[in-house]
Image 1 (cartoon, helix red, strand yellow):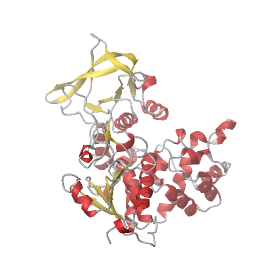
Image 2 (image 1 turned 90 degrees about the horizontal axis):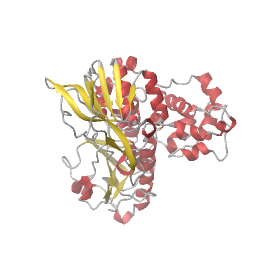
Image 3 (image 1 turned 30 degrees about the vertical axis):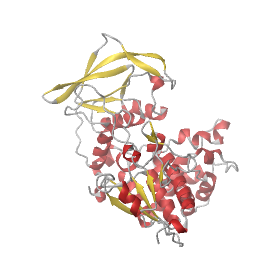
Image 4 (image 1 turned 180 degrees about the vertical axis):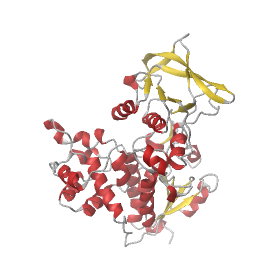
Amino acid sequence: MNATALPIPENLERFPELHRALDAQAAIAEANRCLFCFDAPCTAACPTHIEVPRFIKKIATGNLRGAAKTILDANVLGLSCSRVCPVDVLCEGTCVMSRYNKKPVEIGRLQRYAMDHYYAGGARISEARARGSGRVACIGGGPASLACAAELRRNGYAVTVFDNRPLPGGLNTYGVAEYKLRPSDSLREIEMIRGMGVEFRQAAVGAEISLEEMEREFDFIFAGVGLGAIERLGIPGEDLGGVIDALRFIARYKTSGDLAVGRRVIVIGGGNTAIDAANAARRLGAEEVHVFYRRGELEMPAFDSEYDHSKVEGVRFHWLAQPVEIVGRDGRAVAVKFAMTRLGEPDATGRRWPEAIAGSEFEQPCEMVIPALGQSRVTEILRSRGIELKGGLIVVERASGRTSNPKYYAGGDCVNGGREVVDAVADGKRAARAIIASMKPEAMRG
């Protein structure tokens, strides 16, 4: 895969950015709306605790590079987070301007304004002058590992990031919708982190290099392996042509551009990834895109803003329907058979489980089916190293990210089950600081 070929030119036209960048005049005006609160609730609401009033004040005074450095001190992936963070439920959701019946300060767009200026001028974070003697491996090239690696390098430690894909970045590169974050922007952050002295090595851990080998080579290991592939539907026909899971669908159109969707597309699921896939199918030329969810509208886990945007895109939603079969002809999907559902009593988690209604089956024709269920767990390889798992997720000390094996730390989706990019960054940074605190001269290899 050629990183220099990204973004794909056709995608720039098909997927115009969801939120346009501020120009200089608009950015100054917006920055001056900030009240620069002393006890800034926006900073408290940010998982990485970016000093929001401080960076906005620097924008207001024309110090854009200083604003970017303030952001990067807290969040090394400040560029991508400025585009993908759900700011309406984080920093902007707590802005005190809302208390006065006014629009919150557009913190996300101001952060993007500062970060775009920083990268346009040549992004670089200097290595630490003092050099630690410890070596750390990060498994997985996503946001948690990147944040961990950057924090370790800032403190002078040698770090190698292992990723089994051609390009690092995890879901930032492969799995976030193009209209939110272009793969080229994710790769700009990778190059900045590489410039800090972080080594990137393409290798499948467990196949091309064993955990035992890594333990001999490195003093500590951070697991930022994320989650695995989309869960299978477990129904007849899901291996037919024209069936592609949401993450492979998004990765393919972002990095190859050779994806034909047909006239009618069915997306199965109710989360943000389902929404991203549905919107992309519309942008790629599908006349009809139908999202089917086995629960009701109120139970859908996608953010309200994502749902509202998808309706504007022309996506159609169908509730209380679960797939029972993908119907094929000549080896390709031509329809999905659904059964209507009713919601039963709440289970132990408080969620109401859908129950199929006998005799309610119907078929919906299509040319493509995109399952967008939860992701599978990829952590079993770690169990052999004495690492405790629960429900396929890695159990850690929350304050440090330390696992039951003191040589291993972990963070991101493989710990929290799938949250936001900014949460993964916070996990990685927190683990890095705990690793640094654990580095003892007598335990290190010169």
